[in-house]
Length: 351
Ligand SMILES: Nc1ncnc2c1ncn2[C@@H]1O[C@H](COP(=O)(O)OP(=O)(O)OP(=O)(O)O)[C@@H](O)[C@H]1O
Ligand SMILES: [Mg+2]
Image 1 (spheres, helix red, strand yellow):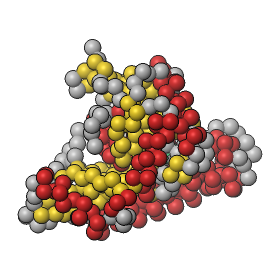
Image 2 (cartoon, helix red, strand yellow):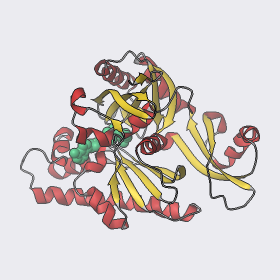
Image 3 (tube, helix red, strand yellow):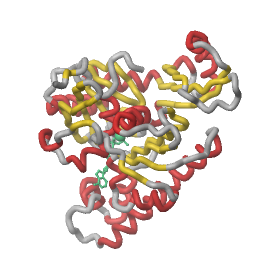
Image 4 (cartoon, protein in one colour):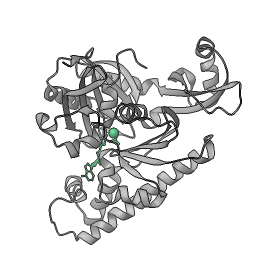
């Protein structure tokens, strides 16, 4: 019933774990035909930069061993300071004129040497451009060096990188496949991983603001490590609430709360920045995902702080996923699979 799509694996090379998803489709419905994840050794990827290339390639190879797919083509993504996404307003022009002029426009907005970046752009559908004869364009600049690092480790693992996307857009892609994009609603898609939070504010189908904040689940683990003098692994367990050690529950709660306060402050700064720069300052709700966001009390604290409804972004709301068949737990997997699902929805040749 489900024809295999022209095989492509969505590969999320996260700093704490690599996640891989392959989908099959029948018409507009999808189902997961392969899912696997593998933990990444700490400090292999720092601030989105691949530090230990051989180690990362090895982790990717292990993910594919588990995945058990013949598919070689991969869609991967970049995040953090490797990418800059800016919404700019330009005079109305044709796509051909835009393609011609985008490089010159970009020079004003991108703080890197234009020679060192790969540029891409997209006209924002139904953009709320201020002037009548103008249009909103999303400008994306990715450092060529970072693209080469990511495609390099994928090739080293014996796979073929055919799409290089951006985390924030992969999340949006997974969101759109699973929810009806209500044009009147402004949603902050928020993915809190181990080392960063990808924030993508969307209005209907259009991105109006995006930013990666360099703080995430590791901040909690590291605080617990320091406070109770534990190894990273033990601190991870304590953070997740497993195992009754010497640490007192109320002390652990206090540490988690203190880190959440810092994280919320960073999110506040991002929201303030959005409100001061975007054409609209509206924000209706938060859709939350990423493993880091599962930390106790975080979702509630987020809702309290901003007075917004916070809902989990479930990448399997409309995509059939038989978690036990892949030896994983559905509740644990859904939040960390969002980027990989968004990537798996791409087709070769997509930008
Ligand atoms: N039940 C849980 N409670 C608290 N934290 C959790 C839980 N499960 C996972 N995490 C945390 O989630 C993080 C991993 O999430 P995720 O896989 O989304 O990150 P990543 O993609 O590897 O990181 P990044 O995108 O920042 O490079 C880790 O910090 C981990 O400790
Ligand atoms: Mg991630």
